[in-house]
Image (cartoon, rainbow, N blue to C red; front, side, top):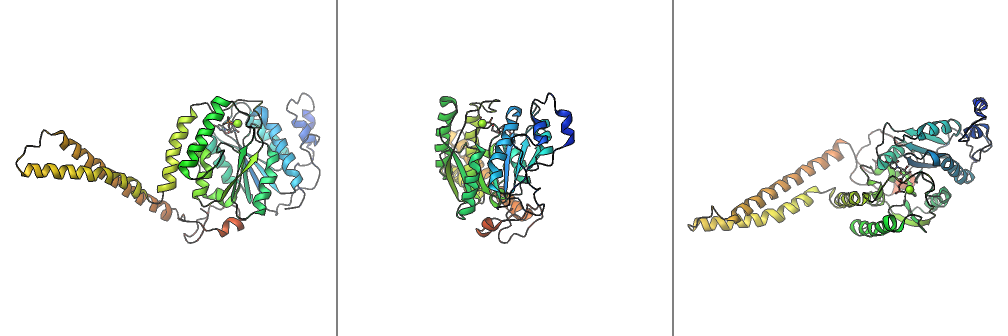
Length: 380
Ligand code: UDP
Ligand code: MG
């Protein structure tokens, strides 16, 4: 990981047409005079990518150019071969067009333009699906995270084979106290307690992973906030490191306080996932027994009364007993269906139920969709 990087193709004659009135400075980039420009030879095609930086982006046109520049400024001096996968998540402010134009001249910039707005989690997943680096780093596009923190995080993963995920912990967080920081403190405590993965800052987008871990997790809905919990379930060892945080100076936040409710629902999902994914019968069936057994006892009691000649037809207890037994039976059936589904998931999709440690550290291959046998770690 010590070959120098190059970033731009040779100056493009087309840029001459842009010389006047180029508000976003693309022409400067093309001419190689912009801040991103570096000299040097083109990267060897054979050389594998060391670091993939994945950034989801929705309507961040004002931040985009500076973002690309700052990633370049942070990563180029490292000598690592890197790629910046910028995923446009259905922006309607011209972000996608600017992204494509920038990518014409920046070798390491790989644009992914989604067909519509899918949300931050799916946008991240789209980036993960394309990431080729041994290490994958995520951050936000709004310049609140500082790409200058990336090299130290990657270096730590490189140096310490005991660590699989490094999660940023924003120091001096530059967000509103009441609407952002307070809910965040409460959410971090709640999520840490509920999932058993103790972090101070679940909301920090700046994180670094070994790619094997990324390949094991699948993001749905808005589960990006729970990646450390999901990674832990996938066997990752996680540490938290302090990172810088800047105020959002351009563009607007895509989330309001209403996300709180969604986070609570997602927490229920993640806790269920962490505890019962491999044994749904214990979750549903357990609850089913808690309801069904008392219901059965009630019905047995009423049956005894009936046999003794009492009239039980009008008793509310009869309805209670019947309802409890029915719900209990339904839940047990739901649990059994879950057991069938988890078998289908693992056996039908040839996905392993477990992962071993070794491939995390030695993982170098590019992502392959080829189905692997179930034995050992297929990383999928
Ligand atoms: N984002 C996205 N799709 C969405 C919402 C947000 O790709 O539907 C991106 C957004 O452009 C930013 C990151 O996700 O890069 C985090 O969003 P934002 O900064 O608005 O969230 P906040 O930091 O306010 O929690
Ligand atoms: Mg932000």
